[in-house]
Length: 68
Image 1 (tube, rainbow, N blue to C red):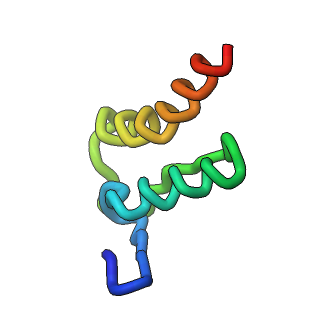
Image 2: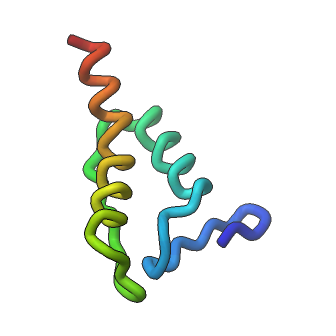
């Protein structure tokens, strides 16, 4: 949920685009930071969770490949 300057991640649905953008901004400021994709309610099938986890890892993998 995005309201003006507030982003609410409810842990009950997929990660919103606003939260992914916030994560990318944090990585720009701090580098590769540990990331947890949390889903407390309405847990989806495993493949959906794995897709979210892979999306969280993808930018780090790209940066590591570029740095190598």
